[in-house]
Length: 458
Image (cartoon, rainbow, N blue to C red; front, side, top):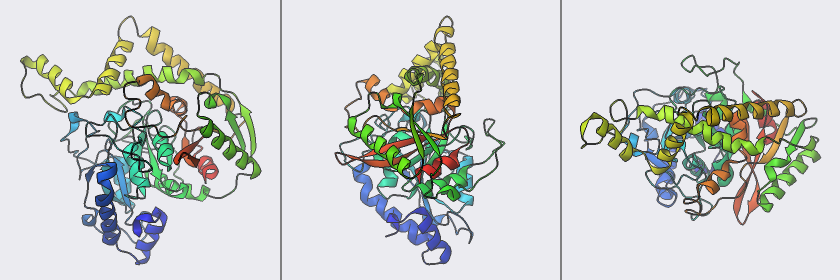
């Protein structure tokens, strides 16, 4: 069955002529039809059989890929999980989509997500929640929950997500797959609908570390259309996938275990002990500013969202109310109808933090905390090649369990947010189960250390 194979295996079959692109795409479309009624991981499906033949040496020849629905695609609407963009048909492909197509991949679907990437459970989607394939009463994480659920359910071997405060890694942990947030600037954001521009990054989700490395190899690289894109040399990350961690120095920061479920903490410490058995030098360390990352993030990210989402006014972009009184009334009503509750809350928080008289007290201070966090990581990486932590403090929680408790919901990202604040690469890999639900291990590295992270993750 093709849907049970890795991207590497599928590409090999297509390139060798043992399988056709249409056969691979057709079976994955059948798989989608079979499992979607239960999990609702996807918002739209594309007939990947009509996308032509890949080049004979294409690295992702015929491989189906699910794309988070905040990444622009010309052959499918891009909704951001919001009524505001329910009928938005992009006129161009995002850079990552252009690179996927050039590599022979087949875009097979757009995945469900928390509206405008604001959430940790994929319950904030305007089109209904996604369910965790391991247990349908549980969330898949967010905001890239649809992408992670689609991969573990066999709807595609690869998916793209976006990560602003953990939105790739946290759902990867809760769904038992591999998810990486690359270094800020490693992957082009051109064609990614912005949430918080200084934090957002596109990255891979896959069932294996090698597949995640393969996908990052395809999408990474400088893009002159993205002013935040870093002009760094291209790399074949799959070469880092070898079982060798001897001599690597790995830190285990104790702050990341505070408030973590006992079973999660135990599984991560056991994984760290295994790395030590394999020859790594593993040592406990401290990052005291970790406690302030969550609060600073929830000032900076909503502030940037307030600015980025101001364009959705019913005139230039987005849903337009059909009945209103005057221009101002139309704009007000369009935004009220188009945005969901969580998005409205974050816009209001961000607007308040940026307002006269409060900018210094909130936004400027949050940016100062961000600098302290970045410097603290710099100090840690003078001693260590990487840090190992839990990805999520808990396994997947129940649908509806935290929807009325915004603090509890946001605490789901306590382990992932610091890496975004510092622009660092981080990867989540499965490291066990608790009550039949996956546990995620996070590995954080210094800037542009993706090769080291893939080496440890593999």
